[in-house]
Length: 229
Image 1: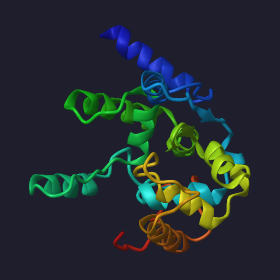
Image 2 (image 1 turned 90 degrees about the horizontal axis):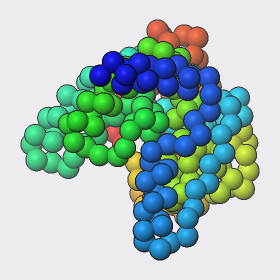
Image 3 (image 1 turned 180 degrees about the vertical axis):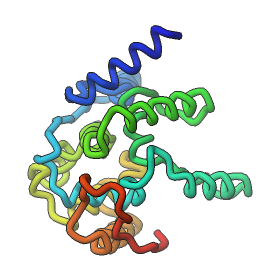
Image 4 (image 1 turned 60 degrees about the horizontal axis):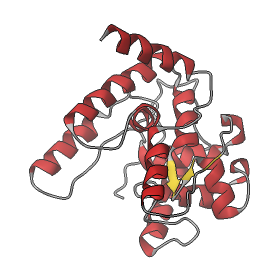
């Protein structure tokens, strides 16, 4: 037990400064490709935050977690709504923040069982304590699955739009972000009607926020306007 806590804390401190070389999900997807006899595809290219367009940074926050700068890893209100929705037997609703998704991507495996969720809570608290908000978002933007074998904003930008992530336009960034709920089903290069609609919603949210994120003013209220997806 003490060994686990020690290693988890040390690895979290280590990854505060060092790029994440590979994640459990990347290994799982590669194994699935090999087992199914498919071509192994794993396109990833780590870039620092300053090489990712502010539009891309803002797009994922607007799409995935508009309270990102305000919470300490968990959106309590969204969790309550999700529990209520799921208890009524309606469509399963998620409530994971960017911090939770980052913790899961870096340290854990996909799944919905309570044991994995417990580990997710633990690692989310660790990164919120030991990393800055900017670092959490930087890691998320470099390791999140953004297509079949595509991980991170740089790989997505190069694959879908043949340009580096720093040169993504507002529309392109919103389109990539629109596919995040199911990046292996949806393709930013061939958006469906649903993805195009979601892209428009994200772009409206980006306008409400203004020019972008301000990590030096985390205590201020975000410039958002509530709108149904």
